[in-house]
Image (cartoon, rainbow, N blue to C red; front, side, top):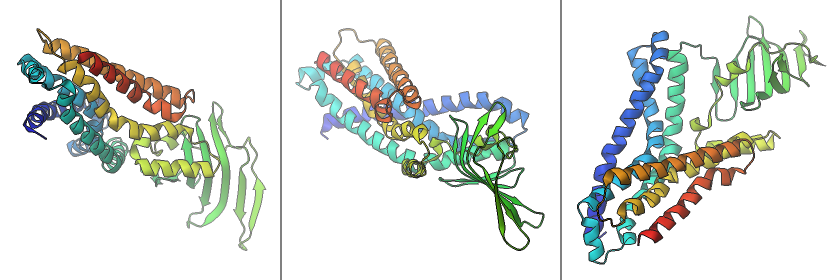
Length: 358
């Protein structure tokens, strides 16, 4: 970088760091008051509350980083414009593209770091704050032990092994219930290929029960559909269901492949998988849009007007992103266009802004 590039980057980082910190603190304050009733109702200790919010900070950083990048782009270049430094750059033959180059490089590096952050730090911390919320704050018994691929659950009927919980369809796949005696010996094994939660309870058609005989033989017979073989409700299993934010990209992709091999529809995870790649690059996309908004030469530049216009454009990005995700979750759009539509549209919009500002 030349001297001018280093100066522009220094101005940008000098705004980005306090803005990012301010956004995280604001997020913490809002989240604290939102959860204050739960903390008081369950008489949570200060230590548990601090742990919960500390483990949630990495997820907060991920969520506020793109708007922080946008605001930093608008403010840093807005201040340069206010001091007529943008005008001086243009008079010296420095184009907006040359001014934007070091900022876009920094935004690209931030996006790559966010991608690594989401892959390494956020899944672990998300699992931890969910554990603190359920076990330490809400005082619920730890009934589920699970990996990225399956769930072991201590239920009323015995020990449950579940291959997959589909929250959207209210369905359990690959359920095996091990009913044990007081000596922890297995009395019966109940295999349920698919159990769907309905208004009348569980619909577990195709269930088969294996009964262990004293001589060691197994007696197998089908279970009548009308029998209530699962005492728990769907919400009991959702408490130990792992959300996509608790899985890394590669763990989630392996989970999708496993479900596909087992003949289970993985569509509920496909959009979430693509979002893990698309969202970290929101920082670069919003910088691409924000730089020409704030960096064009104006006769009487107003930082407030620039910031307002930029935030309005930035809000549109999140609206499109949420709309695309909804269309993807309902299978109206394929996963890739649903997750990447906002990025593509805003790259085109930023290109239009650059062309019109020169």
